[in-house]
Image (cartoon, rainbow, N blue to C red; front, side, top):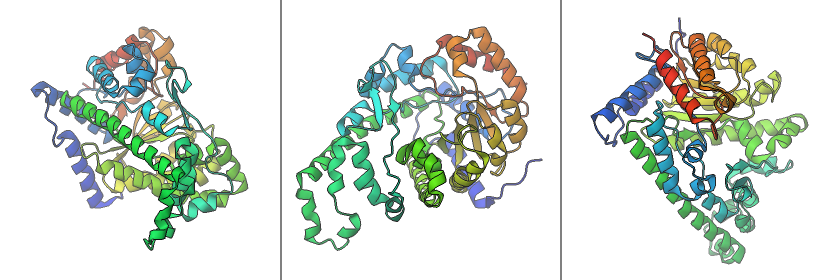
Length: 444
């Protein structure tokens, strides 16, 4: 018997309302009756899986892709990151051809935006990597080991005057700004700083970057409108981040945060409180602008079995991640988490969460054990290896799909999905994944 949720009637009412808005999206004009029927069928498959119930017809299918649509249609990653029309049209064409149950968005970023600001924390096609390769994130200590107090005391000020000038070389002038707090009086003397060439140049680059970001955003908005009209729901419109990953990915880097665990754990714990607040605000603000999607996506980069010890995970990772998840759920939303690497020793922590409010896409976790541990708590997905889609045969994929469905789909709460994101793979293998899930994933 499933344990009762402790969220209260109000949050449950919000959750059900958001799910209903997803099923019947406001402002979406479907192409035809068939598209509307397909849309509702697909959303309902996902809804039943989320709620840990048997889907009436079959196991739902998600595809997590990065640059696959561009490679498949012989479009270079550089062209996709610079030509937004080509980007979203290739994603749309891909979905219409492969027909999964949800639409992954073309969120690979903008090369022009990176170029305008002189990004230091990304290498992208033609800038740091070849034009035929996808972008790469570049970790570094963008927050120094002695800057925790500055970050904790005034986070916004640190981001504007310290962090942004370090990750964008065109924004170095922002480091000459006085603290925003010093402008409280609104006195004319506070604004003399904006006459400095270095500051004015940085602000002009910000304006240019904002205009470019708006063009990219308009293209992704058009994609969502057109693909929903064609019958494909969006799964995971908003994004939040694990607080530990905010510090470890963007500020201190892997090396820095691991040293801090031993040398200054108290400062790290204080910073994690700040990062928790940032993540919650990030998720909720994104959701407010995406009324047709109740799903928050959270990639978990540094929480796997091989990254942190059990004690470290209990101390530095889970409590803060859990707070973000629970806050989003209490506001009526569903949280979709991608657990990179192996999460075998983390499954017991997931049991602390409310029933039927999260989906965990696993990368390298024992799915049989995940089903056993989480069948009455959370929907599970993933673990179909990218290596199989790249090097295997369609018969290999068929056998994997059959075995996975037999292993974990009983009684519902399962979604077929690949593990990590797909850049390159054999198209016939992705189609086999879909075909054989449709064939063997029936509950009838």
